[in-house]
Length: 267
Image (cartoon, rainbow, N blue to C red):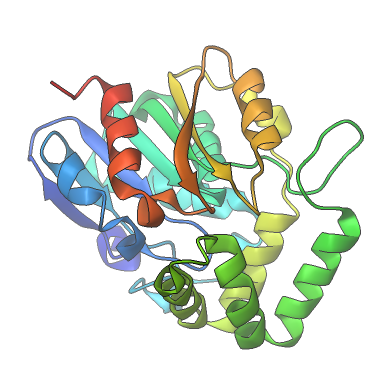
C-alpha cells in the first residue's frame, strides 16, 4: 500500500522542523488550508493530505466498511504518520477531523505532541443537558435530504455552514468542494460525522490541546466549544473574532496566529 499516493500526501515548509499535520473536514480536501499554510510553513514542516474519497486521493482505496465510522479516518492519519515516520506531531483538525485527531492520538499516542481542534463537535445531536446544536429530528432530516439529492443539499447547506453571507465567494467555494465529492463517499462520511458521539473520548486526551471556536457557528455553537474545553483536562479555549464554521478560510490570519501562539512559535 502506497499511503502517500492513497492519501495524496504533500509536505512543505521547513524540513527537519517540528511537524504540523493539517486535516480537513467533511466535503473538503487539503486545499482548504492554503491560506494558513504560508504562515505555518515559516516555522514547521507542514504535512497535508486528503482522506480516502476526498480531493486527489486514490478513490479505489475507499470502502464503505472502513469509512462508515470515524475510526477508519483515524487509521488514515496513523498510517500516514507511520509511513513518514512522524513523531511529536501537532495535529490540527478542522470540524469532524478534530474528533478524528482525538481518536488517532488515542490509537498511537507516541506520535502526537499537541492537538488543535478547529470548530470541533463531539456530538451534533442534543442529549439531555448536552447541547450539540441539533435535535435528532434535525439530523435525520439533514441526512435524508443529503441522501436524496446531494448536489441540491450541498448548494443549500454549504453557505449556511460557511456563514459570512456578506462574502458569498466563501460559501460558493465550499459548495464547489462539496459538489466535487463522490455522492456515495459523501453519504457515508456524513452519516459517520453527524451520528458520531465522541464525548467519552475527550477525557482520555493527555496532550496539550487548543480549541478554536468562532463567535457564531451554525454547526458547532459556542456551547459545544465550552463543553470540549471542560472535558479535555488542561485544554485552552480561544474564541476567534470570526463567524462561520471554517475560520481557516474566513479568518486565516487569526487562525494561523492562534496556532502559532499555542505552539510557542511566535516571536
